[in-house]
Image 1 (cartoon, rainbow, N blue to C red):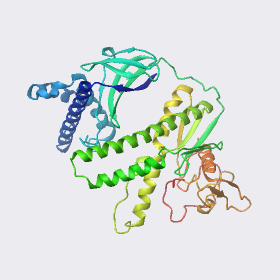
Image 2: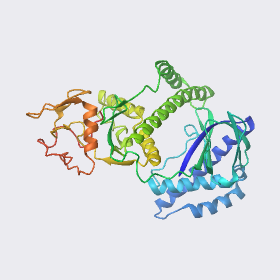
Image 3: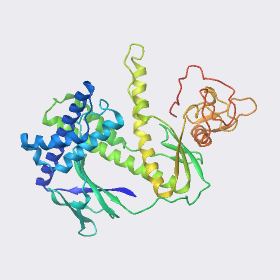
Image 4: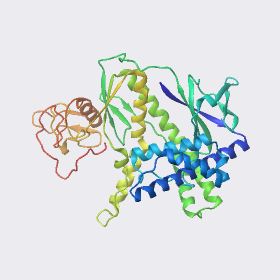
Length: 406
């Protein structure tokens, strides 16, 4: 099974300058190749990896600065672009901005990479053209190296090794008769149908105040100035710690949930669409735009998509099956009788069924998680029925199709 191992690099000034140069060359190759693909599409023609790789070899004769980076990392950049264009579309792939893109490049040939352990806390890796680079030995490598990616994040350089750890996904989970539904929310990051709540603060109050001051300073700096670069570096360091905490939280939660459950059920949420900015029109101006902006920040801050990725990755090692269900009306449906109504959810946390003769009370997120779990194997109709029972109400008035985040 292929798995990633990331280590913090300690580069010499010369090696750091080389990595910066490699990243800039790869960025230029990406942008040039992307523009070429778009120009071909405008003409109704196609361009793929093979002719672009051949043209790259010719371009090195005319532009000697391209020879500053190893050939195989430039070819890998073209492969990554080819895959991105095939999966998302040529005009949906983004440019790599010099100001916003963090340099990164991949060495695809694992046989050219050597790793040695120097002591309890230190190791070193031999990378093409960079030579031996020292890194913090934070965990065993645990497999044969297939490739290595060098990237910069929050002012620090990291090496991520893709290794084959020889682990095989179990054919059967250790607890085969277990299942759980997970409701992702903006108040609590994840709530399970078993009644477990998973949440933590990813940014401290002091970091939040410092980040707000840095945003104000950034607004007063001139574009392209050295002071603007310094302010951005401080902001990146703060957000780097926040994203690391979020990643650690998601990995721990995913490991715990997949170890205890053979089936994990999630809502099929389109996080990118849900966190997209709404159109700025006269009707949506003012407080509605501010509310949408706050909702977007809450969705992204809780790491919905990252938790899904962590669960998918952890499920490979436990044999857990990941299932996605339609998210419609899971927060408005009674998990006991199946009655659907906007009034069932009295507040963010309180759920009380308004159906005659029911009156079921529960935490709103736990009730939604139970509905998500029960939705496995049942089709969801346009009026929100999960196949458990016939709802007593059709489309809720004034509510668009889709789930409102809890």
